[in-house]
Image (cartoon, rainbow, N blue to C red; front, side, top):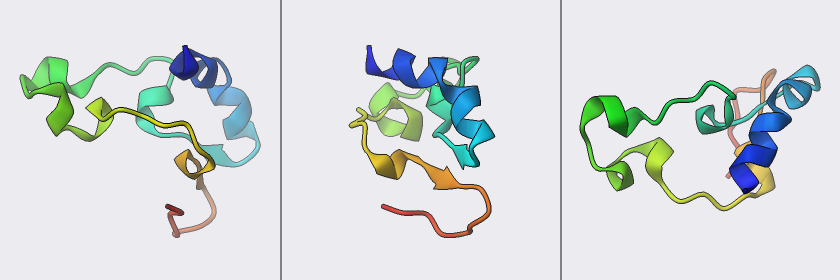
Amino acid sequence: MTEQWWQERYDEIAEHGYKLRPRYHPRWQPSWLKSGKDFYTVEDGQPTIVRVTAFIFRSSTQVWR
């Protein structure tokens, strides 16, 4: 499972100054479970394609897409 790979490395990646999307945090809980919304209508329910743009560099206000 690709998401599990990212979750297992979340802290190591953060130590290098990067932040992953919230869904990769080891303690992430799907937002649609509490909100009652359909999973495909919320950001963290969207299908993910692993790519470098999942990173946001902490010291920058720019988000790469």
